[in-house]
Amino acid sequence: MKRRMRAFALIWPLALAACGSVQPAAPQLPTPVAVPCPTLPPPAPWAMEAPPAPSLTQRLRQLWQESPLTAIAP
Image (cartoon, rainbow, N blue to C red; front, side, top):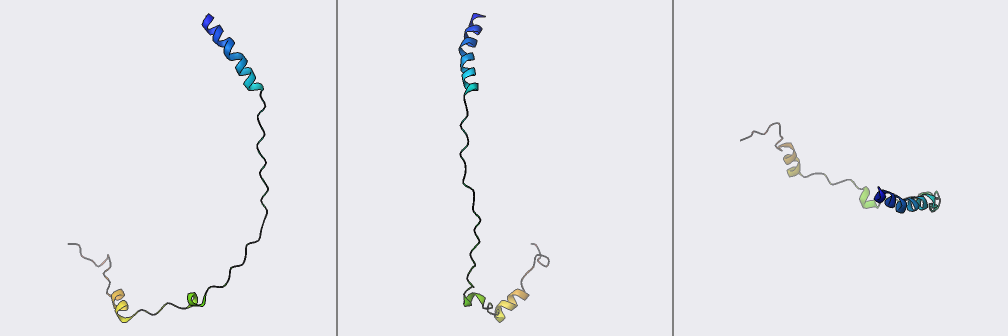
């Protein structure tokens, strides 16, 4: 019993001091400022060109490409 009273007597002032202490205020963050987005320059002329037409070999490969629906599993 005396051990408990002694422990209580040691912890009680510490608990009271911690509860009575003032917490520091959170720092104020700066307010964000609205800024308009800059306009982007037009793309380069080479980027606006159409891609080259596929060659005959490329077109045949696309036509005769084996699809998963027609493939026969070994």
